[in-house]
Image (cartoon, rainbow, N blue to C red; front, side, top):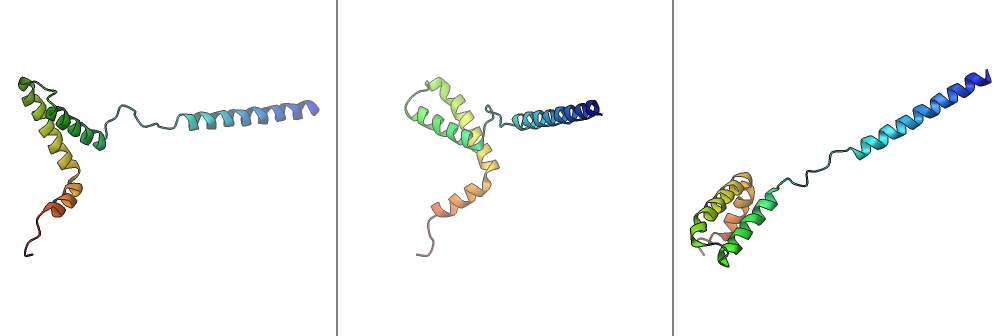
Length: 99
């Protein structure tokens, strides 16, 4: 009978260890954000970088059409995905009427 109790105890201990290891593995394998993913903020920063670089003369004249094309495409995309931000900026910049 003592031998049977020892088997049960070791089985319970083995099960507890396996459960603890499984829980630790699950916690470690939680989905992590992709470090290579681009956010809307990243794209806004890219338009700023393009604007600054073109102002400082970083691009040759023959390259400006390609840079401008990408810049305009980025601006259109950002306006499409963030229309609520454009809506809050527009009234503030509009001149007041009747004053």
